[in-house]
Image (tube, rainbow, N blue to C red; front, side):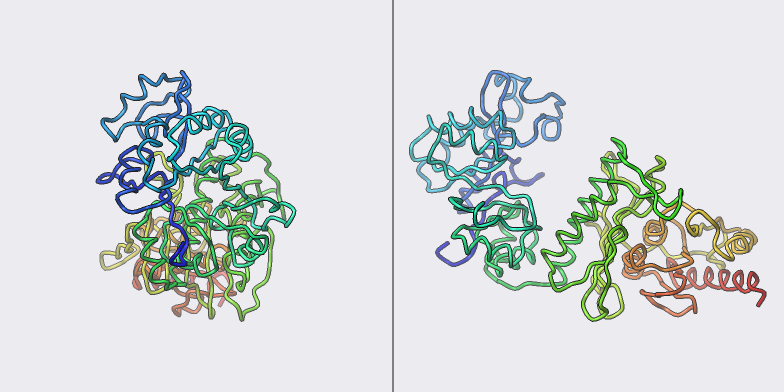
Length: 510
């Protein structure tokens, strides 16, 4: 761009309900034009009678409440969904709308079967309607059959940049923004090509991508991204949190799919009760790839593939699925834990709340040191304990030592019973600790702290206003080598810690 900033591409037009237009409608395209956006991404599908329409999903369910695949519905029916310029439009109508404006429609073709019909519409459309193409590699090949001089945004799906041979003749590489680091951009630029990324809605990440030389940013939030690019300031902590949140969303989708479709291969590690699945490994592979690209000066330690923290560099600790035994046995109570530890304490943490909202999968819970906690974007505060005895009539939570009781667990169970406090063992230390911040138990204890499983949860509890103690009863968010006790407030945490301490002493004969 002339101002030296990346081009901003309006993803599916400028849209946003309830007040704004619906995505992929003429209203969304017009809103983008009115906002001065020069690049507008749209998605295309084909109706039963061959009409090419603007629609992202293969079905009409998400936007229009109709479960049918659009390919099974004739255009005469599809056109009745919505009204005026807020209905499902034809691709030809969108071309007419941008013709002569100087704006470019970036036509995203996910399904190769749609490529030829869409290309024919563009070839027969207004000569002054500017277009470019992105999507499935086979779709791009078919588009060139009809439009030989088509501007193609070459798709790329790996964290490693294309080789010089792969970049030969390529003008622009289009990829997921989490995969793009400074080395990626440098390699593509060295070959004379540009880098485009999708889909970026976070201001800090947008500013960071501009700083490392990305040429094009596709976004759902044109206003936020434009402002971020103009200001050029990168809030690194906010960026770390945004990346962690997106990784948790990916884990939530993978976990929900595994619950719905099955976990595929299940193996064991140290014993029959120590499970690992393909889902664990797939999630960890993705998280590691992203963290390595986004934060090359950080260490990464994971449950499945190990690693070490230098103690001097920031370190990400990851458990892709905490509660794999539950997942492998069809028990829907698992979590995800990702914590960034700096200077001996967690500063960013994200976990998954196993309790879904409606038909959605597990819900990300994000904590940032000094900035609080959100669940699905809403602030979280731990509900305080009540009554003269914070444990009486309440619920405490713990976890086993693998498949066995840890030393003192039976004595703790008896002691809590005498105080009319119920003890639960759900099967995920991450969810058990973090759940206290969400009102799922007044206190929780895990007999041996691990930053892989518990670092993020500790930060969630603390930022929600709860209390986190180590084995000596002192406040600590990173109690390496001992137990971790959390409470909705200090009263609850100290009450559970005292019962644990006395149960341990009784077990050891102290």
